[in-house]
Length: 574
Ligand SMILES: [Zn+2]
Image 1 (cartoon, rainbow, N blue to C red):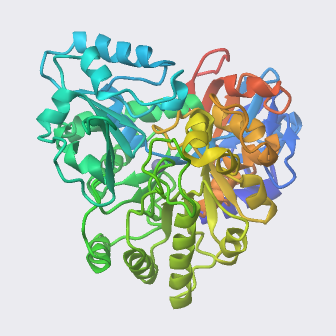
Image 2 (cartoon, rainbow, N blue to C red):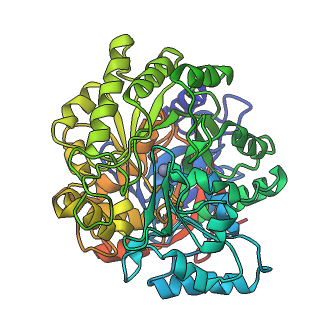
C-alpha cells in the first residue's frame, strides 16, 4: 500500500508526463465533475472535480486538473452540484451481530409499549406455537412514550403461546414467562456476580429483566447460529445496508475468533464490499468467562497474529476488552439517580477485577497487541486509566493509539491522563436515542456531561465517531446531527456546551477514524494517492438547515474506485 501511494504521488507530481514513458497507461477510470467535493484535508478544502484510477485518487481540484488524467478508458459523471464526502467510517459497529440478528423482530420503529408488543404479536402469528421469538437489539426504551422496558406480563399478552426473548442493547434482556420457564429459571435461582435481575417490589416475582452476567442464565435459549454459508449471506446483506448508508469502512467492535472466518470467506472470494477492521474478543459475548489473566493471554497468544495484520480490505485491530456495563450499568463514582429503579447505592457494574484488568492489559501490551476497551462510567475510567498507565510503565504504549470505546463520562482530570498516554477516543451517539434513560439513571447533571467530545478535541485528543449498531441506529447522518446539535430523540438537547462544528463532526467519521487504525495516510480524506472511497449525498451537508442533516440520503457509494451502491437520482455510466 505504501509503495502504491508513493508511486501515485509521483504520478501526481508530473501529471500527463507519464503515459508516454512506460507501458502503463495511468488514465483515470472515472472523472467526477461539477460537484461540491469536501476533501476533509487539513485545510478542509472544497473542489469541483476528482479523477480516480486503479482504485486510488489521482487528482482533486478543478475540472481541468481532473481532465489531465483523461484517457481512453475514462468514464465521466456529472455530479450536478451534489456534495461528495470521503467514504464514511464507523469505528464501532457490530456488523456480525447485526447480521446474526437480521431474522429477528425489528422494534426500532416502536414509539410506545403498545407498538412494541404489537410488533411481537404480529411476528407470533407467523411462527408455530412454542417456537422462540427473538427481537432485534436495535431499540431503546427511551424511544417509547412510557420510557421503560416492557414487562414479562406485557410480553405474555403479546405472545401467550411462544417464549419471547427481547434483548435491549448488549446488556439487558427481557423475557416472557414461557421463556423464563424454558430457561429453568425462577425467583429462587441464584444470580451470578456481575449480574442483576429485577423483581416486583411487592411480590418478589421476576419482572423478566436480566442484566449483564445474569443473561448467562437465559442465553442458552437462543438457537445455534446459522451455518457458515447462511451466515456469509446475512453478513453480505448487512454490509450492503452499510454501503447504502454511506459507509466504506467498518470497525467491527467485537468479533470472536471463529467468526473471523466469515469475514475471511468473503475476503477470499473478493466479495467483501467494504473495508473491515476486526476487534477480536476472546470470551463469548455476554457470557464472560472465569478465565484468569494468564489464561486469557495464553488464548490470545495461540492465535499467532496480532493487531495490524491484514490488507486494505480486512485487518485485525485492537483486542476488545470491557470494564463496566452499558449506561444503565456503567461503573460510577457516585451512585445512580434515586428512583431510577436500581437498588439504593447502586454504582454500576464492574465486569472484571482491577487485578485481572491490569494483568490482561500489561500482557497484551507485551505480546504486541493494541487494546480497545469499553468504558462508560467515570469510575470505570479511573480503573481503566490506572491499568493503561500500569502497562505503560512496563512498556510504553504512547504512539500505539490504544482506544477508549464509548468513554461516555470523562471527568476534567481524566483528560491530561488520556493525552499523556496518547490514547484515542471512540465516541458514540447513544444519547441521541437514549437521552431520557441517561437522565433517569444518571440524573440531569451527569446526563449533560455525557460524551464531552468538544473538550477532548480542544485538548488535542483525536476523537473518532461510531454508532454501536445494532445497539444504536446506524445512520451516520443521525450521528452527525447529534454531535452538531446535541439534540436527543426523547430528552431535548443534552450537553449543549459540547456542540461541534459540522467540520469537526465530519472529521470524526472520516480522517479521525482512519487515524485510530493507523490508516490516515491511505483513507479518511479525498487527496491524491488515497483510496478512492467516497459517497455522494443528496444535499449540501455544510449548508442544509441543522435538522435536515439527519435526513441526508446517500445517492452512491464508491469503494476502491468501484461503485458499490447506486441509489438512483444520478446517471452513473456502467
Ligand atoms: Zn459496542
